[in-house]
Image (cartoon, rainbow, N blue to C red; front, side):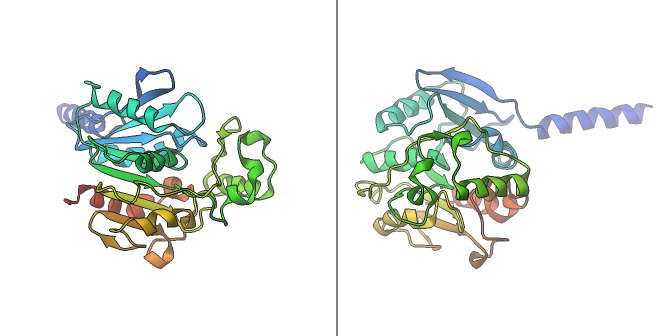
Length: 290
């Protein structure tokens, strides 16, 4: 009986280290709130990630957030009260709040853009000549210049400024079907797709930042096609397609680059083998000394 008791005690301790921390709401603001995923140890850094805007946060709770917690990074999710793209001044307010938030255990901030939330990050970098307090930038599943044809928004302007339940577009509906059939996970019908600019963007400071930057896109992503990143890639002197050069790493998730498959948008977060196929390499890049 004594041996069994010790086994149960050890099991309880192990489970306490392996379990995913509970989401804790840290602070409310006039235009955003924070949800904070904590680690039990002193973290290596903080993934400060911006609201994907048009899909549920629990999509990230399958693989994305558990992976970074296991690797001992805290995750701070910025959730916007309104479904829109934030101004650079608003991002400044958020960064200041985070940097002054005493409940955070690390000052190493990895600025992270998820899906459409990444547009906020890229626009911010394009407007700011100097940025302090950020150690890395990671953008995944994000397009930037949607004036390039071939993406769902450029071809179908009727998708913009609408709730998902009101969209009748055939291509969009077929994409919803793909999500449901492959991952048994529907869109949230009341989610709102904000207005995406289809005017060509002028590269100002985006190509000049010395911050280490990681860009990940899916090969067959209709929402965030790699073509929409061309203006940035062309203007970023230390970066080229699918090549690791110093600070910038551009990844196209495709069979051509030895991935399991040609990734769609939600494959980046829901595909069962995405941790081994993609996230491990992303972690190695974040840990790299530049």
